[in-house]
Length: 102
Image (cartoon, rainbow, N blue to C red):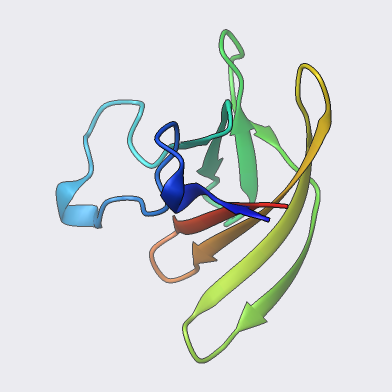
C-alpha cells in the first residue's frame, strides 16, 4: 500500500479553504498520474485532461463520524494497469484530505 504523502507526484492534503486558489485547479489532488477532485455532491471524481467535466468514480465508502471523513475506495484504469485508491474526503469542507494507493 502506497501513501501519496510520500510520493512527490501527489499531495496527501488539499489546502484549507482560505488558501485554495480561485483557479480551476483548486481542490484537485494528483496521485500516481491520476487527478482527483470532489463534486458538489461530495462524490470523488477523476479530472481527465480535455474533458468538459470531471468523471465521477463509482465507489464503496464508509463514514468515520469521529473525524467527519468519508473514505471512498475507487478503481481507476491507468495506462498500464488498474489501480485501487482510498480517497478520504472531509464532508463538511468537501475537500480531499488523504489519498492512498493499494
